[in-house]
Image (cartoon, rainbow, N blue to C red; front, top):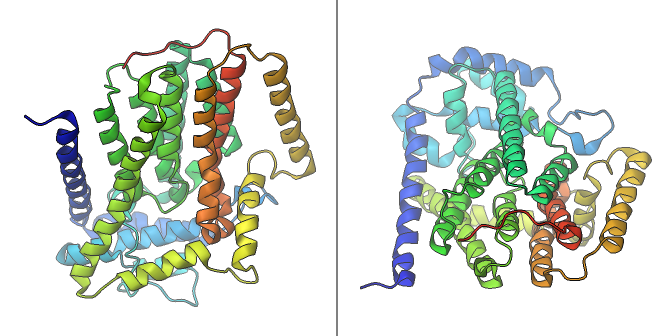
Length: 426
């Protein structure tokens, strides 16, 4: 008879391969949508993208409100090029039409209106969202997709808060609300690139707070493994750590005082998420290499080096390393909104410190505080590890600080809360 650990050793790889096969199969199936079915809405979407700025600010003068239509143009370009006759190649190489002297929105419009073939690969990501876009554009234009994403995200978030209130988890609900404000949540649906992580995250949280979801160590390892895989599949390297850190914080809070929120359990859940996330990268590169008939790893390693220790323009690596965390921190609402916004943020911080000091309880769970703080600090480690990427793309990577804001709110809740929320068993 196999022990629980032995069963888990065999079951996690099986879950990985089955999930990867399902996700890969979905992309292949999406290529069956004929081009003629999506052409009208693709043309309308391309014109919409060309009518606006690639990196326009939703709030004039506020850099952290920039909307990335550059990435959306590439995503639609990849979705447009999918071809059922060469489905395997297009799905794995993620090809699109590109001319270096033109903006990507113009490249997209030319590809759609002139039926220009793909000439650029983007194989290092799965671009699983391209399959969704291929299907959605058979009946929706891009602005309509933005609208429905907004309705879906808003509905999921509102119902999540209602469920938390009913469970008397005040600190958790308030922390998520503060985090959503801090990362300017209402702007998220304005770019496809920003949306996917938050759709995954809200689905995760609804599942985690369900009393029907078994919170055993085995079930949670599967949960984090699949979460890491789906995040890699859909995301464009924006604020990917949220699907790891926020669920960890929620589990710490609703299960505080129990054995399954030990340092050991946190480590193995994070390791499971990382195995799913990194494993999907490796699977993509190996499959793409097999289709190309050549080794893709020199190309991949070049981009990894660029995003970690590469230098951008006049900024050297050490400047990026030092500035990236502060750029991201300064983008948290309302600090990006001038001197008044910074003053409001500082006042809010001082008020939180005052409340935590004056109304602190005589006894609190110091181990819980340490774990919350450790999880909340991870976004800043990410900014250091991917210094170049975080320096250049701070206007969306700053949203990873939702985890830091939630951790801070829960720490304050543990310090001052006299009547804790319900604590589940298991």
